[in-house]
Image (cartoon, one colour):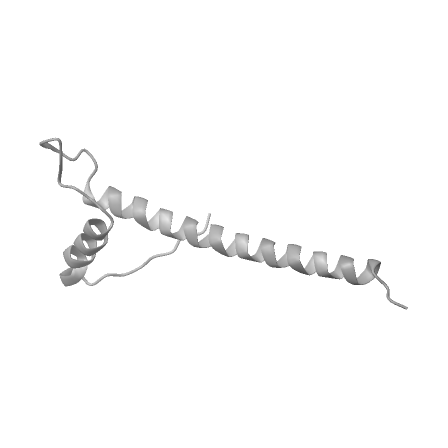
Length: 82
């Protein structure tokens, strides 16, 4: 399995972590209790979901374009005007 590493300067880690998690709905407490999911775990979840959503959207767009081209090719091959 491939691995990618992203480097965030130490001085910016809290800023990046807070920016991503709070922008995506992280709550420090749930029903008055500490959130059992850490910010780092939530960050990983959000990051994974982002990548997955991007791949899904790209592949759906490609599939739709391929289907459109195949349909146009079929019409072109089947309908001959004289």
